Amino acid sequence: MALDDVGESSGEGEAGSSSGHESPDQDDTSPDPDELPDYQETATTNRAFTPPPFPRERENLAKTEYLYVKNDSLNFQDKSKHGGPSFLSQIKQIAKLTGNFSNIELISDPTRAGTISKSIQNETGHLCANIRHKIFDGERISQREKHYLMKNRGWFYSGIAQVITTFLCAHLKAILTEEIQTNNWVEIQTQRTPRDCVECLTVHKRIDDGICSRRNLNGARSCDSPIEDGNWMAVMIGCSSYLFLPWQMANTMLNLSLTDPSDYVWDTVIPLHIEGDHSQTPLGRAIMKRINSLGPNRKLPLYVEFCWTKISPDTSFIHSLINFLKVIKSLQKVYLPPITVVMSLATPHKRHTPNSYEGLKKEFIRKSCVTRVVANCMGISFLELIVQRRPSFTNDLFQWNNSDHWNMEPIFNRHVQYTQEMNRRIAANFSTITFHMAENQIPKELFCYETDEVGEVWCD
Image (cartoon, rainbow, N blue to C red):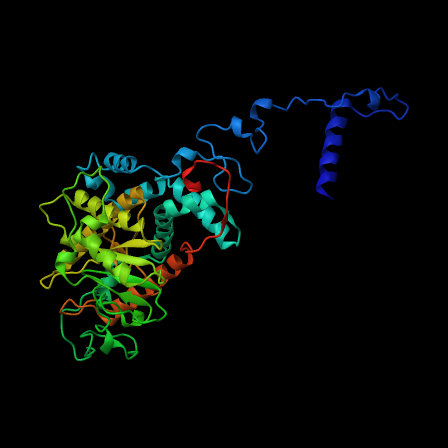
């Protein structure tokens, strides 16, 4: 039965139940159709909730209302928010979440930080995602949609990073601490054994694939030398954990890491409410030099390492973090592809103990939670690699482990160097991240049609 027939049948049933069964001989007392008015308003019609017709006449537009354009993502949105949240409102939100920058413990708990990150309203990023979907589907966008997407691309990339984080964490599963100890699944091998790989200095539980000898060969290259053509997919600017990248990424990710400690410096005393300028800091100038070395035609996602252990204990972590993110935010305004902040790994010291390593990993998780919340408030893409077992903050009886994709091998040897297993995990994470980042990258050329909003910034 068609849907129209169902509606008619239900309507007839309701009429019959209210008036009872009529006799065939009963006279038809219904009015003559010719005597009915042309329009008969029903009781359910409410003019107050009937939307006004579109497009509106120009003289009837509100001051903060976009001119209606058919199939435009910005229709019905507030035009005064075209530039995204103001920088001052971002800082005020961070101050509210951290007790006026005095208590980062409020956002360092993983559960609380995850809830806060999801509750942060990234309406700007959602609108940018709608515009990006139109481009992906082959639709043309308006000039104001292009301007909106370009101006707020940081918020769009921030939303993509949150989706990737959720995807990476979805592979973690709970594993009993007792099972880890019983099977001796240590992450740091401290003793020498006869079965050690001569390159990794650790025991492999799988067949060597022949690349252990090249695990430290993908180091930082000079940005002064010309970059040869290749299938480059991303650029890494590391300073500690990512100075050497896995050999598996030698032909896909450019390693332009910072080898001079004087380059990894930024202003930590500038007032928080003042926007940063990357050209005024050694870090910003060093990153910009590497961006310029790529050339005008090579637009690649950029990863910048945030080494939380390099922040002096004498300075405020939250102040140093915000000023670091200001540099990234300033760079994103002049660089079209995504610039993603990547957290340094929890690398133990040579005199570590099992307890000190577990404590280091918990501190790493806390600092990552703080960085994620602050970056989301500022519209900056942030990610952490899931390559180490994660201790539970609520129950010491279990830990979080990627049992489906990790080999239960040490990831640090007795010299606290990365083993091939660690490199394999890093390469797998970056492969996933780069694929999604490149897939959602904003194209360099956007063909759009003009709208007649005279005097608006996107029409200049």
